[in-house]
Length: 194
Image (cartoon, rainbow, N blue to C red; front, side, top):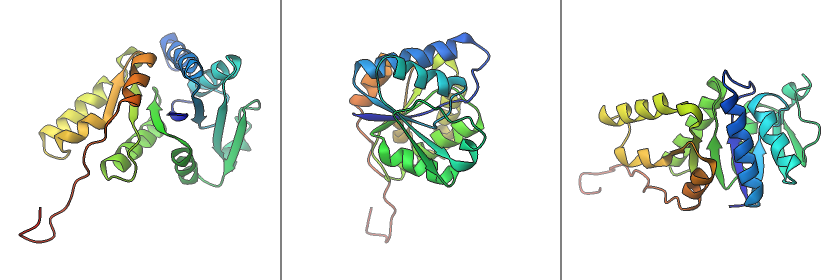
């Protein structure tokens, strides 16, 4: 695993633990020689993660839509900044560059990025691990809701294994290394096929 895409907030959050968790993840990624692929911003959890990795001597690739770069929130000291035309292109490029994904706390945009990546894994569009760094138990409601989806038969139980989660960056990275994707759902095309 050489590159991990990280989705996270452009705000620092209500607790110092969010920035601290991002910094711990950054140090652990550098220790393991993993390049960060992220949204390219200099602010919030995103900025703290990138700053930590750069300070520790690691590599950071930012991917940012041109309209956000024009608002001057792009990080100016990245190893590489890739400017794309839209938010959709940003996610596609980040996915193409990454060997796995980690999501840190964030708002609706972060959740949308995580859930789309999760869905792509469920559909078999990639077999890359999708981790949640569950700082301050931030993702507990999401994980509970995914179990509710499964209980209500809107999510096959085997796909719950896609949602790797741990509050500790080192343990979460270990889960990513040893991840085995579930078999992709097949659809019945005739009465005799399964």
